[in-house]
Length: 94
Image (cartoon, rainbow, N blue to C red):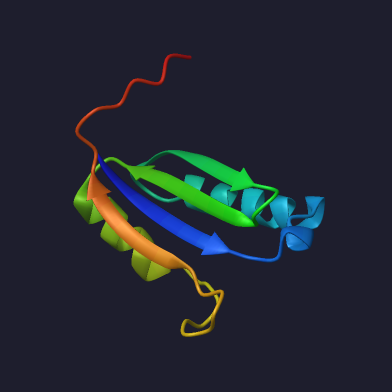
């Protein structure tokens, strides 16, 4: 299993229900992609920091989702940082 970890920091006032709804829609789009295995979205409402983790069955699925992913152009002060990892332990009881 593989994971994409996206980190962003924004103005805490921007962590509105509309913005969180948008994030849910993005996760919905990922869920329609082959190999999607789940997502975790973490936010700190006091600092404006957010982390989104998407899980993928294989490295090939993760890479295919990267090609399909559309996001804001990078380079700005609030541009997301994106890293990928191999998942070596997953314990998420239902």
